[in-house]
Length: 350
Image (cartoon, rainbow, N blue to C red; front, side):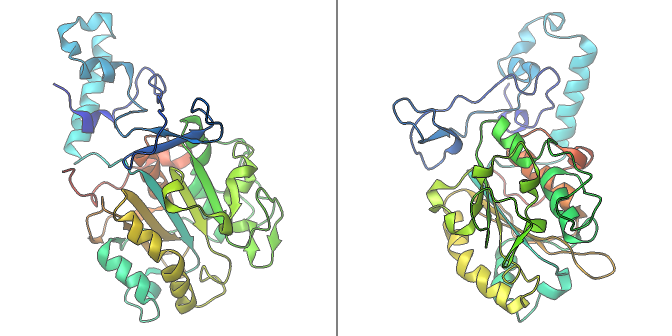
């Protein structure tokens, strides 16, 4: 018997990268984007990975999916390994439905607001409409202060040791991160920063742009060509598998007001949210840090796979990162290895 929803989440005991994606050319609406330049005769075109292709199945997972119980376990792995693996299957099954596999994910990072400053605020009508139609995590927290360590936590599961200092220290530039693991899995990534002077720019600040809100710039395994100004944001049907959007210091509520940030989101995010509801796309909006005694931050999930509601489970940047990794079927990086994904806000598969 084959349980496909569970198999996608199985622990890869033998080789988490054995089964690689096989991309095909085309643009079906249910497809997932892979790396560019592989379509024969179409250099530079985006390849497509169909939803049915799994990236993280182990040898044992594939064997079981193909009815491997008819074979001798000794030919595949020691019995004790099979037992451990089956216990993992039971644990995953008991934890609830498998996480979805969106066609696209867009992560938007805002600044310096606690939950109570946004939830129910008359200054944020757009965000409160998004809260009502999506999932709000009311027990969500930043991991520290100030900004940059929280961005590193969300992007690489690590924190730097020099606050908002530029360049950052305490994080290896070659450390695995969300972007590097997407690329290693032949999926696409891009970060879009408002005010960034040009693609791949390494400076610390320019106008209302701050590198302290762009952790990907720190990493040698994230190409500069994927670090883009917001004006380069693509047409929605050309989105990468995972995109990060960072408004500038005024529009992200760092220096601007809540009302100004809400208006910016309504204008820039509103059309994308409407499109996402019809195109299997998840929108995540979160804040880097809050300023109440508990460092609470609003975290909102929106999309057709999300079950609207208010969720009290404890959430922090490491759990959001772990959730993004599991949604994309990626290996886990940094401290995301020690936490679980957010699993209770998803609609059941039809």
